[in-house]
Image (cartoon, rainbow, N blue to C red):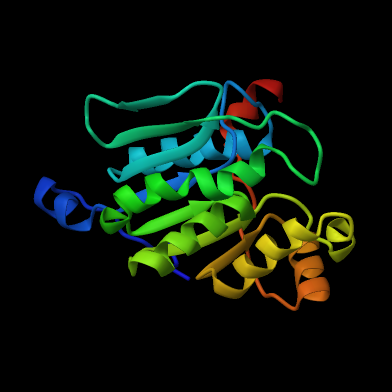
Length: 207
């Protein structure tokens, strides 16, 4: 897994061009269509990497098709039209993402350094495309929930996707020690703990 904790970011334009990463951040949903933790994390990660001068592709489902680049050409949003709106755990929009994201990743995969996935469905898509086309990007899977074996008992198809991702991802991230321990206990899979960032200064008005 690539470690960014001690990364030094470029200070000159020439250095920036050489050091710039091309990152895809994926999740089945995004703001404003869905407003939950993973969607907020997607937005935060995008803003952070852009602020450091890196190129970011966001890939998510949307009620309608959107593909737009910012004026700086560093930020591109790829929104795949959502075709499955059911809420059944056995078949929903997340399953669509596992396959609908693959054409986009196939189109841009040769330019990517990292695909940072916030769900195991989109991580499956990234791994399948990398295997099929021989791309060299790294796949990071960030588990935004508490992974337990009991969760998958009634959804064996999901268990298949999850198992493939645990086996092939270059890095697995969990949000807390609690989630890390469950992943290790139930799936014998180690992970890196990376809590969601909080800007403490923004809470100073409450003190």
